[in-house]
Image 1: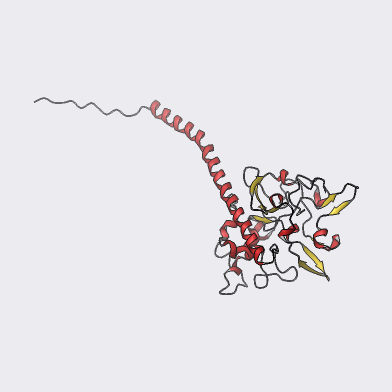
Image 2 (image 1 turned 45 degrees about the horizontal axis):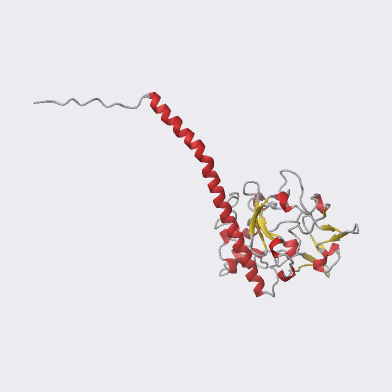
Length: 294
């Protein structure tokens, strides 16, 4: 009987294993940045899509309310709580329907839980009321100083929403932008439901300065209510860019009134004016300044 000798099994040598590990490490190092960029691009695309839908929801709201922009919120004095107030986020929710879409996927500092959505003064059966506090920490910052300014009339602060028809160039007028919270609530986590323009006063050819807020209200400059005066222009300050924040590789996603979306750096959002603290800088190129309605 013939016998067949089975050759002994040969394993990998130490050098071969080390070579394989090195090759895998090199491939991982080469591919990891590609995966990170792909993920970042995907999240930016999702964010841009959410902004476009939010702008369309704002337009639908306006169609039902004589073409007026949604107010920042109803109550401007006294104890504004979920029981007696509504934010702009809640007002457009019926036209949007997805609360999670108001958050940027790149911002992981604030994620609403069922407990955080439950306000102490909620009323059973009112589903929108539970979004009152959380709605102030969305990543869609509203350009409310121009679209929904607060003015003092008969010594009372009142919201004066502007008509979308008053906007001359819808494709170059900022409605929402990526935002970061500058509030102490929730420990500063999440976004901000409002953003602040970098400049307020426009330089005229005769050397005078015009308050771009006042012509909208038809009231004197001091009648326009403001809580935060411009950008701080200080590094690491939450108000460095007035609440706007570059979540996407140094750029912020923005949406114009016509629904067009784009990514812009904070520096680009300050174009057209000399950005200085407390609105000391003047708007010198209104065509490049995307905040004003005119």
